[in-house]
Image (cartoon, rainbow, N blue to C red; front, side):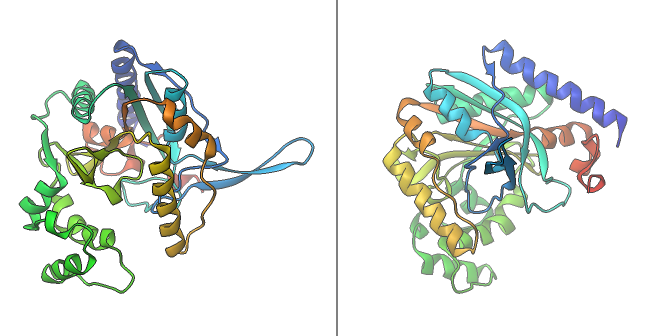
Length: 315
């Protein structure tokens, strides 16, 4: 534990709260323990058992994100909200940039576009790191072409064509791997390592990679999803929110099927969340990793260095 890093972390958390409070956002403290967490295929919640005094038991999980609760609050009539608190993800690599417990801010605002969401995210980041150069904005298509020489448009949805490109880029192709799996072999090896040297918003992902985002009205093969990379770290992931319950159910069912194919547990769709969706209205939101921002400010090499008690000293 480094006392200077801990002090910096406290100061940054206060700066972030001040940024949103000054802009009229309301801070939410959503539940950390829920019955039906998100079921993204590549995230795992931490499960527990909750017992009532009479012995009745309930299965619950620590949230991987406050997203479902925040969207229900938007649907109840709130329009500018944020949640700054701990989130939990099981099975994460303890590799210096991940932790089973981490601090995240997630904020939502009605009536804004994905470009306005990027504007506000850049402003918030600059409120903490003021000397950053101008942020770059790249679509996934542009990034794949610039860094990997891959024309993504002609490959969308065509697994065999993507497999051929993977082989050309000296990647292995295994039976059962999906189009997304093959995409990420190239993206993670040739594109992501080059992002963030200049702060970069990467946006407009293939729709299969954005289960909670609206489709791009100009090209429904893509979704209005954005990620932020700064200093070699992925800091944020956000969307223009999908509010069509029919389309959302289909997307959730696809995620459930993918989890099954990966041999992972599947649980029911949160029907209270589904009922709320049509009342949410046009909105955008983003989840931002506070600990990684603290690492950039302090120069810490590991997320454990900026934790009061690192994960390795808790178990």
